[in-house]
Image 1 (spheres, rainbow, N blue to C red):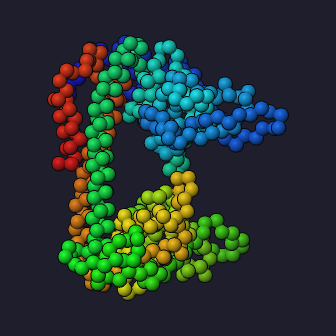
Image 2 (tube, rainbow, N blue to C red):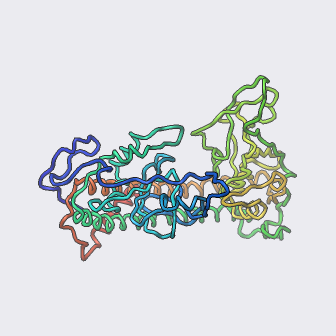
Image 3 (tube, rainbow, N blue to C red):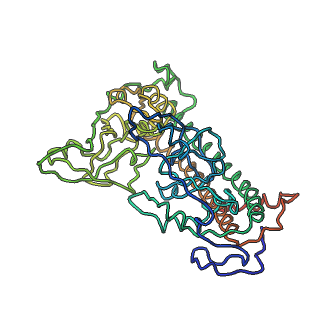
Length: 471
């Protein structure tokens, strides 16, 4: 797709914006909008103050260009404060802090929830008649705005925050409201096409993951020989297994080691700081060592909480997708401890660590962990006794290794395909971001743009762009 540029440009005097069309304005956001702070949760009111519980939006509700209303919390506020914190349709919601990808991202509030307030970590920006809310929201999604929010934010470990004054000082390029509408119409049309292709790739990844799990589940419960005689395992959720396999509780074939609890008070005792693994480090089939924290323990406790090569790490809790997932520890860091929310399972000679780790990724094991866990809102946990009561299908060690070799080859194909799909998504996201940035900073002229009658050529162009990384 080839688009024209404007006939004349001027210097915006803003390095990260560059030149803008000669007839556009560039001004601080405060000239064209006001900002409303939000309500802080947990305020205490005296008994005489009339209060009311109302819905309110948090950082998690404000996504990139839309509001996620799947889970809206409530907050207690004084009746006299409701108008001060109430959202108006057309307000642009912007996150004050969080991960860098959440910082400053904007979404237009459309009044979907009546009498809805907003958290003090979410700004509500109210544009005047010269600035369309969707223009501001779209600008926050551009590379130029992302650069500004990053440069003017306060950074800490994995988190960032930006002040209301810095938000309102953000230089904003924009044309007349009529031209804003034309550009937004163009972006809505073109980004919708790109988003559709992204959804296709995401669905492909979901299908690959489902297929991957199905291959694992079949191999670790049925084996590789389609003609082998089968028997009832005696376990309802496990079904039939090869007749020559054993089925036994995990506790018959392994021991379990609990981990160290964070925040123990050792008072004046001498401690040593050592690396330790958390739930976030234990992924499905691998250990993520990009961020390994340290914990203080007594020297006498090191042996008790140390991991050994061949231990199978399993998560005690977290989101349901994290529950019980296992991976083999290869002693990448020595010594290394583990958190009390991560179990270390130590198999005996009849059970290879890789077999146990692979079985935890099967749909059968996932069902067991879910059914035997303690569920709370968006979180789950499973006890060590329930983990060790897991019924485990057990071929001989030789057969375990043959099945694992087969799975290694099969699963690598799924991994390669998923990487290609991930690259395709990343390329489409980059294209989408570049298109938005070009439009809202005036690098392309779409004033005469109209939706094409025959869109097949553009469809193919965008599809090809998405597929380049997966070719």
